[in-house]
Length: 237
Image (tube, rainbow, N blue to C red; front, side):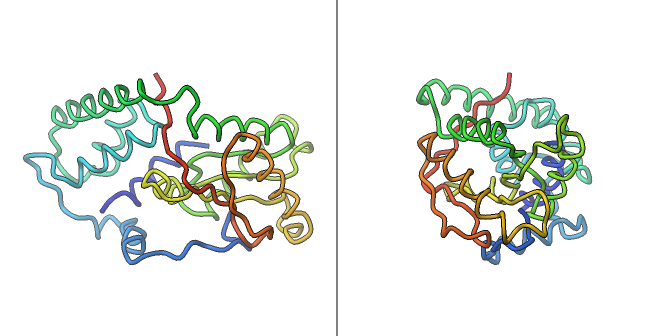
């Protein structure tokens, strides 16, 4: 399995955290993926043909809806499988096939998908002073660090009151038809207990306003969840 190490690489290209909020209990398979950050532990891939692991990685990346072909070629050939002599013609042809199939599926999607609703909710959160991030790092700690970078680059940082994001493992779960988990919190860690719930309420309100179901215990220590979300994110042209 390379999805975890793959996610670590690709999502640093995108613009919470462990601090105070419950982590989802990891399965043995997820723990194995965490270990795969070390290239020494990566499985060997056939140099003559694309095996099931490579095909699954390509399919997963396509279904996230975040990457065009040039991104996919670089990620697969130069980053995730850089140690192996993959047949680039086969990789290219497979990516073309999967992209074409995915775009064909999009023709049967509803006019407004759950991913569109999430985008709408994130846009309104931004207007209310949150920095929202998609595909932000590999863990909640990564996501918070990316938030801090985004805050430094924000044109009006004093207007920012908090954040909301999901990271790579969250993306992997929701593409796999599990609930989407969202991290949230105030700008300053020292204000998590006093202002964290207020930020969570903003996130919940905007998600529900977009027509998404929300599960949340109402505390900073519990991440919000969007159950039953159908991941249909349109691939950029």
